[in-house]
Amino acid sequence: MKTTLFATSALLLGLAAAPVRAQTSAARMLQYSEANKLPTYPLYISDQKTTHLVFPFPVTYVDLGSSGLIAAKATGAENIVRVKAASAGFPESNMTVLTSDGKLYSFVVNYQHDPKVLSLDLGAAGSASSAQGEAILSNSPIPQGNLDAYSRQALAAGGTSASESANQLSVRAGNVGYKQETLFFPLHVANKSNVTYDVDFVKFYIQDKQVAKRTAEQALEITPIYVFNGGLKKIDAKGQLEQVYIFKKFTIPEQKQLIIEVYEKGGGRNVKLKLANSDLLKARSFK
Figure 1 (cartoon, rainbow, N blue to C red):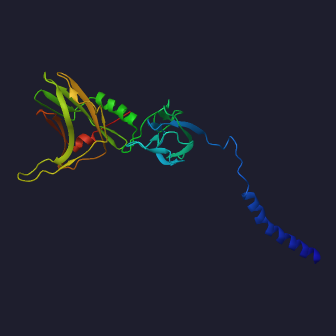
Figure 2 (figure 1 turned 60 degrees about the vertical axis):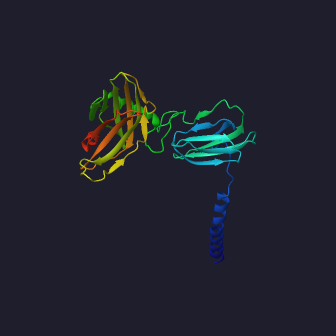
Figure 3 (figure 1 turned 120 degrees about the vertical axis):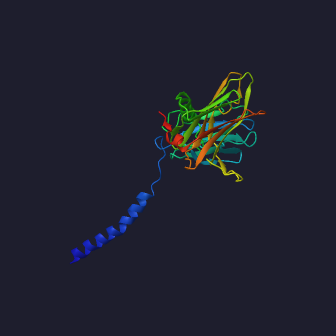
């Protein structure tokens, strides 16, 4: 009987001691080593120049170690952070950046009046999401470098969705391209006159196919998210201009049409093209 009581008491003591051992095990100190230490990048910034950091994925979080640092995401780009010193000679600080793929980047930041590096590519080792140094536009699922590449394909593909000529100015809309919920409208403009043509603006809008007289015309203007060769505005005599206007995917209601208008700056050589929904539905995909 005594033996049984002793065994029972030992069992109870063992059960009682089990949680204590578990707590002791859970309270072990984390051992720091090269294996679990994240890399830290040196970063030198100035109050006179802005430094840009290009990450391979969109930035979701930025933390600054002190008020001596100023940082923000670049306007229109999800993966670029611009950094600048709030004042000259701030004490050494740090900055931490988290990207959408879950990776944490740590920087030790110091002041330098004339930094030698003003653009740092954190994706230089290679990334499946985008090429090196590429901006990821806030309003497009496609990196800017890929938008340029697809635009060149759209211009080279040929084809015609609509064309019109007036006053020795010819405007042709090539076949529409499509990639990742994005539409590409190639535009070929040829100036056949001996007078230079200056593009004021190109306007895209959707309107009814037929508008009754004495009825206000209802038009919905749509804005491109990006224009390939958008900075080109002058067409020399006998010259040409090729651009691609890129939009988030849309379709045109049956009773409406897409209008593209090219306006001359300070002149009257304006040309209008009309596209139907069928032109969009026949859009070519890119390689």
